[in-house]
Length: 574
Ligand SMILES: Cc1cc2nc3c(=O)[nH]c(=O)nc-3n(C[C@H](O)[C@H](O)[C@H](O)COP(=O)(O)OP(=O)(O)OC[C@H]3O[C@@H](n4cnc5c(N)ncnc54)[C@H](O)[C@@H]3O)c2cc1C
Image (cartoon, rainbow, N blue to C red; front, top):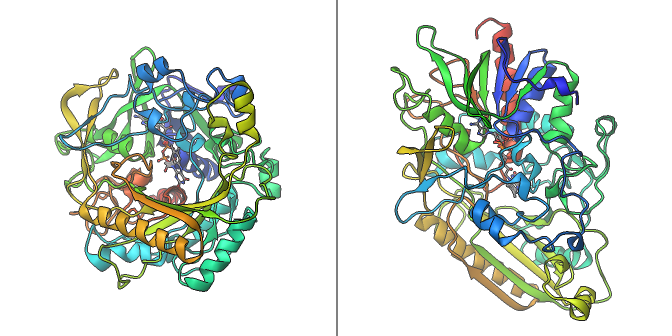
């Protein structure tokens, strides 16, 4: 990518401003640029160049001072919250936000873990790449049981946009033909190991309504000509993705959407530009531009455009909207409904079960497959029998104990070497990914007095799992244990934990879509009901969390919104 793509000051009125360069921002910029619009992407963090800045990549554990662990003092000083993320290691730490500079608060007796990735590429560099479509039942769930508002779209409205993003991003998976987990445009799936194949078969015999499928993941198992032309090649199954991948084998802004946007010569990027608020013109009822604080020297500047897409990730997006106040919108821009900040959701991972598998002791796996397996939500029908609303997916896989996790083994010398050679029994584990109900009382707001170093009010969370989510996790542990016992696994154990929201890093809601402007922020095209040239396309726009990982839907909603926006601009309605 050329250096002159990056700008600092500019008087230009761009066709489109995109705030954020993560998964949603990358897609918005690509789609605008490819439709010929001069686009400015504004990113609060530093530039991370594909390949060059993957400084943790290709470092074996023994080349790292603490064998993948991070220096305690550094953790204490800078990463006291981020360290809770499973992907936080010595090779990835520089892609996580610095907690010292990014304070937030939580209401009494609540907790919310806010994982941050504030650099070019955002969390697209850190994500686990699980990519699933929402199905028809997911878009109807709120309407069926009355929690939250009805999604203003149905599966048919987004189907072709899923196909669009899957084809470009490269999603591996099998055509499983399931009612609750629609097929997509897939590259070949990763292969199951022998115990997994056998478990899948046994489960299919005993629980035909609960299929176990290979995880669908944003990896190039067989790159197409288009992927190769972008300099992306086949996944090497190193499973070190979160340190960055010079092969471009997994989807990230850097590997996929940014090169496509840059190729058009329509893209400029303003890095190190922390968006403080949107500039609103009350007379024309339009957003004129964006007010920015320089990340480093804290100076102020402004950028202007005809339309603004806010893609800063769920919580940051809503923070920006809330901090954009005017006479007309004293409680946050585009918030005439008053629901901005409400209906915050995450997924719930608080249940798991596992058991020993007899045999297969002459078998290892080759490579490190970067995905597990998945049992989609089997309670997807509203009339499914259970004592809670909605449902959960179960994810997991089979692994040889001790062997896969050698890099995390403690020990020294002979003892350590012995451990490296050890491969214990095969074990199969499942953990739940449960849906969280959209509830008005789960919210984020701006703290009345506390600000960060850029002068932006800190976020305060008041969010907790309800009894429904707890009951769901009890059921998930029971069902998983029952299934594993039924297929003959030994030493089966299960547990329910009580982690708080945030750590699934699937935060959605707070600026929801909806048909009624009195109860929602955005219309069916992610456009503000109140202000026509303002769009929000990240997870904040979700009406429900469903059980699927959110990013594929974020991508599809984003490209759909850009398509609509450009058509409206061309028709001079916007
Ligand atoms: C370890 C991990 C594993 C995950 N696994 C999965 C998975 O398997 N599947 C899945 O679907 N999802 C997964 N996720 C979640 C996924 O990463 C997010 O859903 C996705 O990145 C959201 O995209 P986004 O564009 O909204 O936000 P991001 O990708 O976070 O990008 C937001 C960007 O906006 C910038 N920004 C924020 N505030 C401002 C501001 N004020 N001014 C300017 N710029 C700003 C940020 O710096 C960032 O670059 C995972 C996340 C993590 C961390």
